[in-house]
Length: 233
Image 1 (tube, one colour):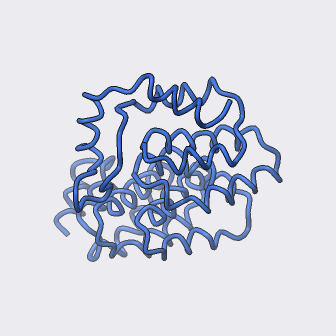
Image 2: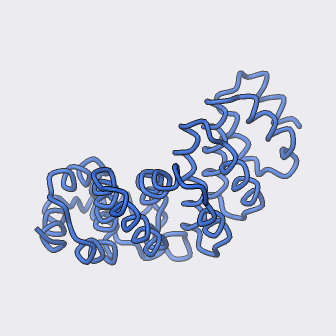
C-alpha cells in the first residue's frame, strides 16, 4: 500500500459533476481563498472510508498525498495522520504532531483544517503544559495556520479548558477574513455550550469590536431575547 494506490482509489470514484459544484463551494476561483485547488468531487465520508480501510502509511507516502494538487488526496493524507495518531504511543504521537505542523499550511481549505487539526494538534496539546505553538500559528500570516490555531482548541473546550480558546479568539477578533470570523464564533459557541457564563463574560467585554459574523455564530444557541440584546448592542 502506498500513496499511488490511495490516489488511484480516489480517482476511481471521482465525480466530475460534483467536482464542478465543489470548485465553487470551496472558492477555488481566481482571487478567492482557495484559488487553484483541484477537486475530484468526492464527499468526505467516501475519503474517510478509503483511509479507514487502508493500512498504516509511512510519512514519506503521506507526504506525497499532502503534496498532491487534488484536494481529496490532501484530505486523505491528513486523515491518515488522524487515524495513526489515535493508535500511536506517546513518542509516535509527537512525531505525527510535528509532521502535521510542518505541513500545516497545506491544509489549505477550511474542511481540511476542521476535520483533522483538533484530533492531532488539539489532542496532542491537551496534556501538554506549553501550548505556545498555537499562539505562533495565530500570529502567522497564513490563513489556514490561523484557523488551525483556534479550531484546535475545540479539544480543550470538550475538557472544560477555555483559557486558550478565549485568548486566541481575542488575538483574532480584528482579523479581516470571514473564515476566521466564523471559526472564532464557532469556538466561542462551543465554549458557551459548556459554560454559558464564561461566554457571556467574554461577549460583554468584546462585543464592541467583534465582527457581526463572529457574534452571530457565538450566540446562535441563545434564546431570542438574548440574541437581540447582543446584536442591538
